[in-house]
Length: 288
Image 1 (cartoon, rainbow, N blue to C red):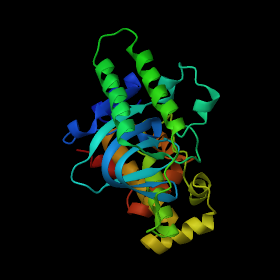
Image 2 (tube, rainbow, N blue to C red):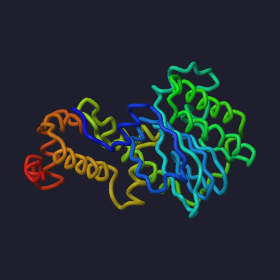
Image 3 (spheres, rainbow, N blue to C red):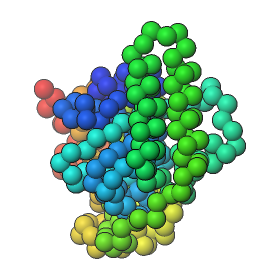
């Protein structure tokens, strides 16, 4: 029993990939689960990217690699922002035989620098690859998936030739950067789509381990920046998700409790009542 997300997310999961032109996508709503997909963007414009515990200021053309295991957020600063994006699952890429060097590329390397500054000649070459992917995506060619995989690998090979950017912005304090990526990682755990795929990160220690920092440093940073504790922010987000599940699915309380990381339904009931002052059943009765 799964939970309905956007039509786009469902289509993306079905195909395992999608490629589109950013300037043609301004008015479109593309909601997808970041935790399931890799992302490669070729963009031209002014922006700021927060990735792991670092921030990067871009003003020109960059090639960006988004890894579902590493939180990131993106601020577009210029009025005109153009380029291309390809989203794909690891399962989609698996049929291709990846060389050892490819597996060490920026896309798969957890500690790598995911941003490359691109020259005009490189931009034109990469534009051509993205345009060919878009053409194949719309074609009826029987082996278009294999061809698109080859184009993605070609982008990866090109990235191996380039030197990662060193233009990291240090305007934000360490605590602010850590808070930014914590909030992104927290949000990435949701929505919970099925009782069979419960929350993996439930406590401040879980998040600290995932972000490779000591839990005391995480707690102190979050408190200084937001005025709230790490546990309070996690609890608030879980409560909001619980309310959404109660009102928009027919999962029973045991399924909801398990999906949200509670060992027993009574633990979930007690947690929910402490946070909201009411019971999960009462919220469900308000379902419209």
